[in-house]
Amino acid sequence: MFKVTPNPPDTDPASPYEPDSKKLNEAAERALAYHFPSTADIKATPRTISTLFSVDPEATTETLVVYLVETLASVDMMVHQLVDHLEGGDRNALLGISNSVMLAEITANRLLDQIEQPA
Image 1 (cartoon, helix red, strand yellow):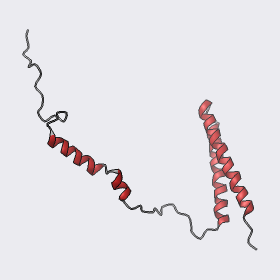
Image 2 (cartoon, helix red, strand yellow; image 1 turned 180 degrees about the vertical axis):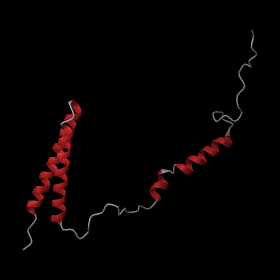
Image 3 (cartoon, helix red, strand yellow; image 1 turned 30 degrees about the vertical axis):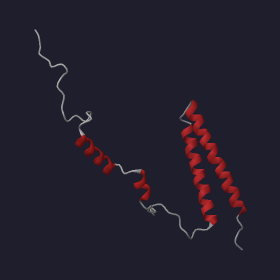
Image 4 (cartoon, helix red, strand yellow; image 1 turned 135 degrees about the vertical axis):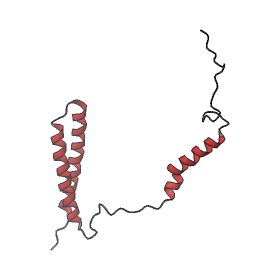
């Protein structure tokens, strides 16, 4: 049985892949520009400072360093608990992170040693 098929097949004249679909392309460009602003538009938008997480401006240096040391010690403990459940490369990567945290903790402790005690 012979089936009549046009050669080439009929295509939709408003196809987005055809070069003459100028209106469709313009609409798509407007939609993209609306939903995805350009880098220049993003950089021109003024930055608003978030106050969700903030540090008390009245806090002393000693208070901040003590909090830093305690936070680093907590992170190091959490990393070591995770290390026990891993093997191979992931374990080694986490131990590397642990070493970096430990160095930061040692540095913060050294800074804390250098802070003069109030009289």
